Length: 492
Ligand SMILES: Cc1cc2nc3c(=O)[nH]c(=O)nc-3n(C[C@H](O)[C@H](O)[C@H](O)COP(=O)(O)O)c2cc1C
Image (tube, rainbow, N blue to C red; front, side, top):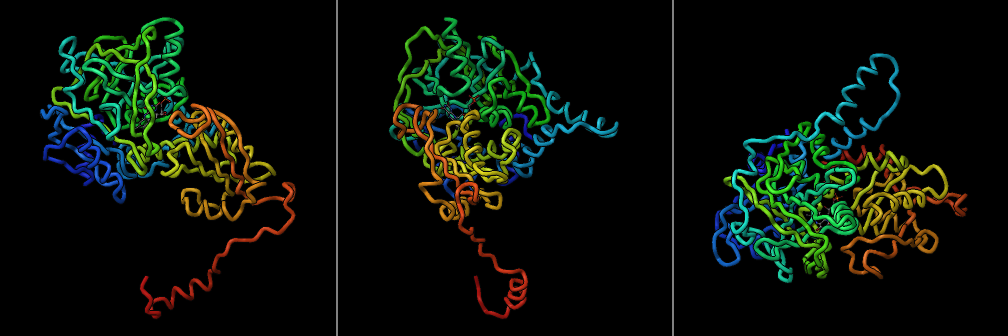
């Protein structure tokens, strides 16, 4: 069962021994970040944290607790999505994508509920008693400075909302997008919106600018954990994240009309900041910000959000996260995406067996892929396919290996890759879009990529020497040694 809202998720985490409460007063300026960082770097991601007495910048106490590191372990990520293993979600998607024509009425009948899964849980509109609108602040009552929005790192440009669901609408199709984009607090009622140029929210903004229209925006905090995760998932632009969250939850997400614009917001959220971006206005300086890469992102120009209302529960809990030198909480959100999207990658690139983006590679810097190689040049085909797919197009280094390599173990992947390559023959450079956060590319968001073909080389690929096998002990000897192990007096 996936929790319906953040407070239920916290209860679930507490019961599972995954939550630590901090009752002492701790400042939202750097202190929460330092404590959370120590936990995130602990074995298995440390505990989720609930700070019950956050102190605001001026020394005042905040009126609500702060939750952090909610998704920061394999276990918590599974609890968030209501599965035993993250691959279980992938298995559900694989079933949906297996489009074998049914044979006979039995198979036809069995297929019906499977197809219905796709559309069974669309978001549900609710009105009346909407939890996230129990308190409504407008006009002079709006003060972002009264919220426990944390300052993450010493050189950050200011306090940042870091775990939001940023809701916008495609002006052409009307399809909603929900993205997790950090938002910097500039003034009591003004924010800077860091949607990067490759992201869907930014595309909506460009479309609204072309039309010369003001763009409604809602920034939701909390709600059910599947919706929070879905905001970070790189879904195609025409798929509503709340529909996807409904699929994950096997239950619709309840949405209510925002108070000051016509977007819909998650009714079970803890808090929603409503507002608009005026594309006619000059951009504002956003950043610097201690980022996923472990380095500061330099300040740059982004649109301002004017806040028209802050709505919240009567007793809200403010969820947040920090990013920085890996491993951090975001690794587990990204890892869920890696596992959930494997069947979709396989759907278009069927030779892919598995893939992995290790934590130090910050998602876009390094992708290991294993393939079932059936013809010469296939590793290059796979790299080129990946560089043409959604946000995978931002991958800086792709290493392709044979199917017998466990790419989820970076030590094994590097060991095999470094043995298998003749660098001049097996490494190629390509060009393409580069992640906004990359500070080394020759130009902002444009630069080179490296593909490494670490598969076994074939004669048709110009390799005419013999390829050696891996060293593995024979089963009989292993079993003999197993039987004598107790008598050897060796402790490992
Ligand atoms: C904690 C966290 C913070 C993020 N911050 C940003 C950000 O500031 N800007 C951005 O464009 N993407 C950010 N991302 C990545 C996006 O959430 C991700 O690319 C997502 O797919 C974007 O949604 P979209 O595909 O609907 O645009 C962040 C991800 C996480 C997990």
